[in-house]
Amino acid sequence: MTDENPIVSEAARQMSICNACRYCEGYCAVWNAIEFKPVLDSGYIKHLANLCHDCRDCYYACPYNEPDHEFKLNIPKAMGEVRMETYTSYVRPKFLKFVIEKPALATILASSAAIAVAMLYASLVFGAGKFSTLPMTTVIPASTYKPITMLVYVYTIGIWSWEGISYWSEINGGTHFSGSGLAKGAYDAIFHTNFRGGGTGCKVPEERNRYFRMSAHSLVMFGFIDALVSISFYPDIFGLAGLAYLLGSLAVSTGTAALIYLHMKERVGSRSQKQSSMDYPFTILLFLAGITGVLVPISTGTAWFNWNFLMHDALIAVVFLLAPYSKFVHPVLRIISLIKYNSDSLKQTI
Ligand code: SF4
Ligand code: SF4
Image 1 (tube, helix red, strand yellow):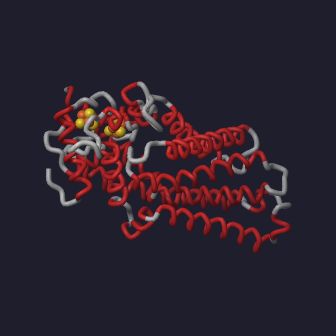
Image 2: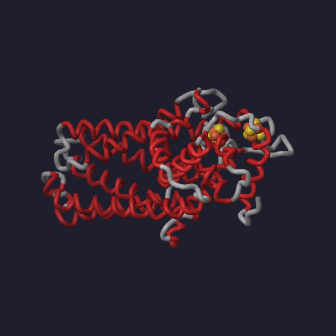
Image 3: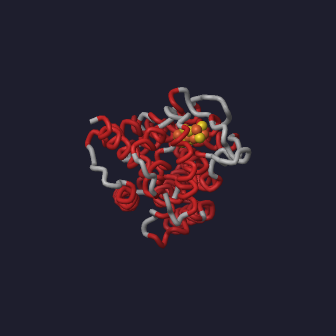
């Protein structure tokens, strides 16, 4: 395989050695997928990289790992580097590429700007002293809240779709879309089928199988979906919807705290550093959004309620606006790769 991109070429070199070895078969979908294509071209390597869940099982299993061996293999790191290439190359519109290339700076600037705008709005429109005493529906009326959130959602989903279509057209490689592949891909994504390192859990943060990372990821994913659905009932967020929002926010903050802990404890060199640099700022942003979400029902009736709610909304807006240029592009590309993998897989068995 030839590719002018050295990161993709290096991953292809490593995968061609694995294709001859195949010891890691059964750990995840990547090892089945390399059998489906005799020539691992650039698009297919990107597809494999987005199938990889970074569980590190193949890292600990491999006797040819760098720097000890002439083969210098490190599959999780190589896959992570290629994933970063795909996240960067599919940024749409392209001029926003700098956002994903400077994740910490972008996250800090965007969050600071959003909080500053929210605080200025509260102080200038209502007066800082009076703001905290007004009813929530006066300071943030539903007639303003709903169209603004809808606009943000439409923007994020529109950009995600644009990025996803570009990715699909490069990795598809002539595979016909399959409805069963779509259903199985969605199932695998929801139930984290490939997150289990062959059925016994991930070797993260060290060489011991456990379901800790999968559980943390599930908390973030399901908590985020739950919070998203329950906040759509705004301004009715004090009854059942409020309880659901509290639980969702709690799940997001606990899950992100666990993921940050795992990143800090994992073995240096067992994954792409570039990927870690992108993961940290966005995970911390999600954690802060989760914590301020937990404080929404807890601060009800206090002078802090309106300030916290406003800050929480500002952080959530940043999460959505940065999503297509951050860690949150991975659900889109991974689901597309899972659909392709399952479509290819079903084709093999026909
Ligand atoms: S990662 Fe190492 S052990 Fe696993 S298939 Fe590749 S060469 Fe073999
Ligand atoms: S790190 Fe885990 S998910 Fe990624 S290729 Fe290796 S075994 Fe598969």
